[in-house]
Image 1 (cartoon, rainbow, N blue to C red):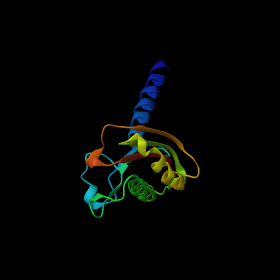
Image 2 (cartoon, rainbow, N blue to C red):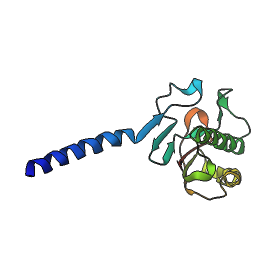
Image 3 (cartoon, helix red, strand yellow):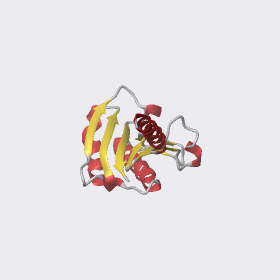
Image 4 (cartoon, helix red, strand yellow):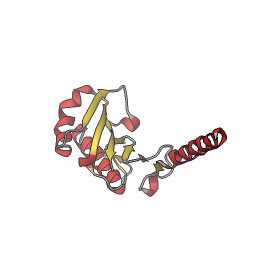
Length: 146
């Protein structure tokens, strides 16, 4: 009886470990020009999507949008919106945002755009950093429910 129980425990552990690997999906970007980045555009596990940070870059033009923090915030959020749509989710399913500003003095202007996109008010962390990729003024990442 003991050996049957041991075999059952080993089999259950093996199956559990195997199924956990299948519970995580690493998604490349939906944009052809971004499929070779050294990170996933989104990582899916159970019913959550973890998106990589987005800056205010127009991916079609390959450059930051002009117009300062408000324009970059809007573009970053539109980029997030596009990635979420690709994975059958949307901004109203976002449960957590992390916002990184290059300059904390941009907080008020950033927030004036942000509130237009998130009427549900997901949890949020906002801080300033010494610099962001390609001279961006803002980077935002989100966690969303599927």
